[in-house]
Picture 1 (cartoon, helix red, strand yellow):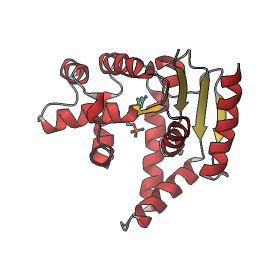
Picture 2 (cartoon, protein in one colour):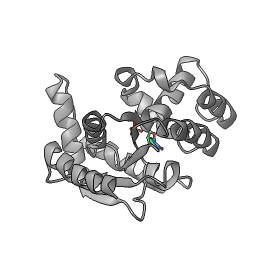
Picture 3 (cartoon, protein in one colour):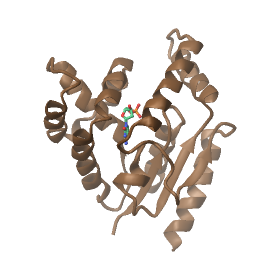
Picture 4 (cartoon, rainbow, N blue to C red):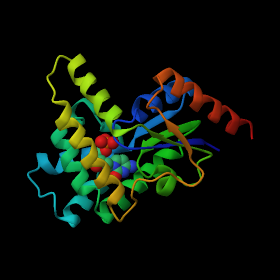
Length: 210
Ligand code: DC
């Protein structure tokens, strides 16, 4: 049987970096489920289709190819905005959750990160982590990332955006962002990536021995 690690948390909490590192160290397959919402939204944008028609968005989600997810194209801000609009649609979520569950069964193990992995997609996962950090710290990290990449950024605008996305993710009626009851909370506000990884590793290793 495969071993599933479910990682949830708000935007820019560091769960992507942590998930990739865990997958690499354990030799597991990794799926950033945010990319499935982003890819669906981008396909609609590219085809000039509306973002507010649930039947059209569902059809697009049903035809999504998980093998073709390209982070560099999908990470753009406008794609994220469009993704957050279709992520509230139950039919889109149903289609993408089916694809995510199929992915989660790959051998020898999988790491899925998103908003509803521990609560909806893989509630049976033996390891569930809820990775978070204060909105100020998350905005600061995103700001530093953009500046380090040679871009210019406005901290206040990024902070407002982080808060707006939290409200959208936590406030929607279908699969809102929240920790699963048995999730381990990992607040990375005061933690380096390496420290967060070591904490996660101890939890994973303990679960693997059971
Ligand atoms: O994590 P991200 O920015 O790539 O997510 C893009 C959008 O998809 C965001 O609005 C949250 C949503 N999402 C979701 O609803 N459920 C998931 N499991 C992952 C992402």
